[in-house]
Length: 262
Image (cartoon, rainbow, N blue to C red; front, side, top):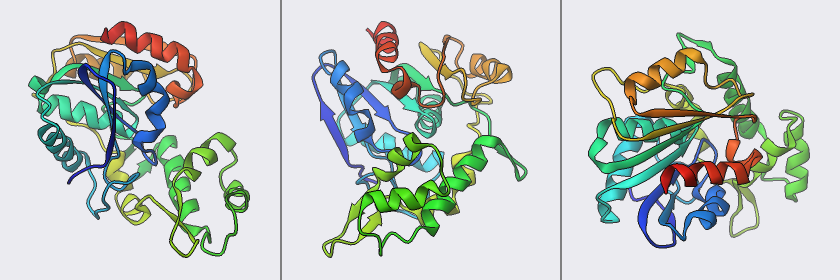
């Protein structure tokens, strides 16, 4: 699949992969801080942003998408950053293609599954609520984004999350609202987005930085042991934030990744 993307700056390639419901544009402000050192690529992953929709979405398929991205951008080796879903994807990509990665940054996600035998973790319940809320909203008859926000607030109380989700609102040629996300595919494959990344008999031995949001609950002590097996040259940093580390402490986050990458 050919992914839509934005490209900024000059230098060694740096590819940043967004999380669930996001797009490359979410990372523009971070890219603008780094584009004097790197050529920064911000792709939209399948079923997100402006990239094509497809009923299939899992980490092996998305890894193939990124392998193709490397190929048609003529990238032999790059630094990778991934947040949440993007973090799982960069881990899977690095374990499958270690020779293509210089340095790896994983943001607030672990290798493990977040849903086991149908017993959903708290994070999974949050995602299920988000998808169900977006699916049930009657946005076609809505007149404004503020009206849709009011409807969404009945299901999702956090304003910051609603603002993030509403970035996916689009209008068609008739002026009707629609979701740019492929909600059908995300709904159908949510458990795959929460799936584990297999690392048995696979490892990436290059430099890896794992950044955790202390208050998010996405990474625990057992997860750190798995990281050390899959990524022996791993450094762990904890921020006093929730899941969106790069948004909650942007300046400190940029300083941290610059120190690691440069």
